[in-house]
Length: 600
Image (cartoon, rainbow, N blue to C red; front, top):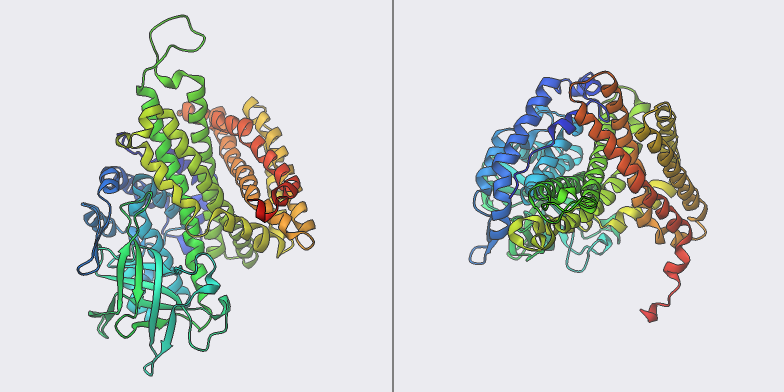
């Protein structure tokens, strides 16, 4: 199998254009994120991904995580625990965390790239750090000083890990149906009773303790989502001196048998079989869903990065195969020996489609991460608010489009391999299986789409969406100055794409109060439309800089010429699909909703 290599040159270019590190390290909050420090982090992370994680990916998939019924423990595949200890020792667990908690305080723009490397090289491994980061953030924002000192510190150090416990057998995405209960005790703790399903790394053998963040209802809680509280429920109780005490009343009763990500245990967790699991409330009662969405937003952003990571890995794998596989003569050439299939036009089309979408999704992820960084660290309150609004708008787009994109890219990876792609030993099938979950967990694509057209657009009257359109038009005006044929063609396509976005925003705002079902009928196409056009916008920013560097005589002209060619392909083949999606959004509702329910 081909070996994963992190696209470091591409990543550094994004840190110079879409998410300029030079601006971030000027902010006091990110003063430690100097170019030299970041370059060292990326280099070390790339080495760890290719030399440690990638070799474990295929055998880990084949071995899978194992549940041991005798003691309800879980054993992860060979090599995974030692890999985690290595990741912890190199500071990976604390990379985005505050320095006063033992972290490195790196910007999300940098962490997004190192996280992508984890997911590219070994998605089953990368899930653990991703979810632990979210658990830490929730405790730091809403937890008491005691919870922060007792739990967050050890999680930042990577000695303990974290989970998020939302879903229950009767309550999938509808959290208003949560039944897990938390009964207050005289000492201020709670006894937790209930069952949670789909808990990633709910049990494992990597860390001394697992800190579960659990949604539950207090006895006097109001019905619905407004009556949910968030509690910390550790696997082991913690003594006053910080040492581990007795085993808590929580156990993993089974793990799921899944289509993909076999190395990652997805646990069914049982709380309170022996009198109640001891829990500690996070923040105020009945505000648990609000706090959990701190984790959820980061998790959704992280899952979008999984889509980028799997897309990159599938692309790299397919390119290696296409260069090596010799079959058939070159189309249009005189009869001669067979050529590598990368010479064939349709294979080129598939590889370009894989490459262009992955690069656009990565650029969009970096623009989103950069906005998050500025929303936290910019000295001007208005700039913080503006960037936070952009980040909030982009999260469902990034999560929804990047993960849907990964399905197609992994699918095309198999297609490039032909019949060999259907054979597990070539590795291409694993990427397809692993990618499949990304459009489902942390909120399906439809949930992201509903969030986009409802909370992120209609609820605020489209203010942020309209500001986004203005920003894209301002960039398009700059792009129009270029005389490069690829960028001239891109400009025309991008303008048409922006027009399509504006058309659908107006449709959504004009119909949301009077015909809301029509808006939701086109919500998933809306995610695709926004993803492609916004991804193309960011890709064009990179291409414009590439043209400037070529003109200036940069030594690596071939790399920058490839940026322009990739943008041209994206503009010619992907943006027209976005425009078609706009037509579906505006005109497709009647057909979508026409059939009687009984006719299905």
